[in-house]
Length: 177
Image (cartoon, rainbow, N blue to C red; front, side, top):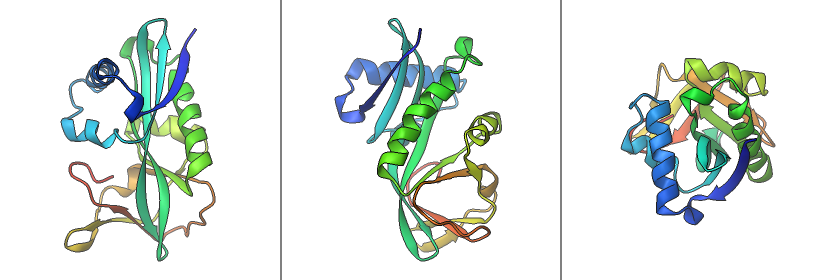
């Protein structure tokens, strides 16, 4: 039976952080870089164990997303992964249950950038694919991020979102969305 724990980055031990990173490296076939891992830190983690084994993980971190002239307090989902030999057993849903509880309890909207493989999970949970344009509030000002729109999914909590409008994320290194 899988056991889920929700914990802030500050309460994770060095060993737990290493185990999470190893899981992410395995789940993403070595395509999960240092900046990707950095994006997952500083917020709440959903950690799923089966006995002593880490089998799934996800994180939600605070970001600001601009929409319709407002900076929305956004719970941004990062680093959702299930160990390859444990996929299709509902563990992604267990992770998302915990993360969505955090989002609904503290944010105006949830946001994430889904891979093609992950999009169906999020859609089945009520996340809505963004149909407008996307930008980033870069050091040089508002800059369009064409090609990112198809992967952006939102979970409105209290924010009113205008379909077809622009959504701009805050700046960070690596993948912006």
